[in-house]
Image: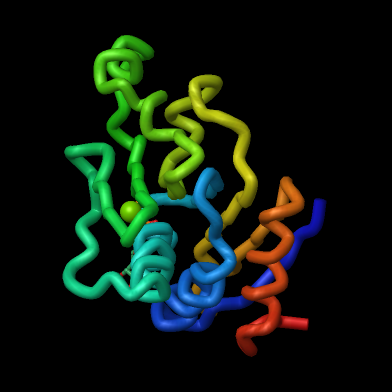
Length: 159
Ligand SMILES: Nc1ncnc2c1ncn2[C@@H]1O[C@H](COP(=O)(O)OP(=O)(O)OP(=O)(O)O)[C@@H](O)[C@H]1O
Ligand SMILES: [Mg+2]
């Protein structure tokens, strides 16, 4: 398990983390994004999508809970579980079916899904500071290490 801590002075820096990570994401990976309201989770997801050549608006799935993207032969699902209700909602929505080998899943508010969520490969935490955001990235699987390396080499790393 490896952790990287970055200081992100503005939203562009948060987006850059997502862009840097994007090429290292492989189908089947589960990425969690934790942090308070307004910490920058959706901003980072926007960077991932830009890094995967998805242009156009990136909607926050605040009410729909999930926004799907099809990228040639792979799928990416962006979840926001802030408004996820009781366990029946998880079952009723069939969220389990989204976590497939051909899908990358990015999850805001993973805490709200609790034990339903499969194990994460990569955990990203965003914390609001006086100078912007502090981003903590932890790799929990071998394939997630490549993401950490890609992010570390993008130039904004605080060393
Ligand atoms: N490093 C940063 N420094 C300053 N502002 C930032 C930074 N990163 C993102 N922001 C700004 O923070 C605001 C909230 O970002 P965003 O919507 O991505 O948060 P979120 O974590 O997804 O919130 P929510 O929990 O409500 O979904 C945006 O205005 C964004 O531009
Ligand atoms: Mg959000």
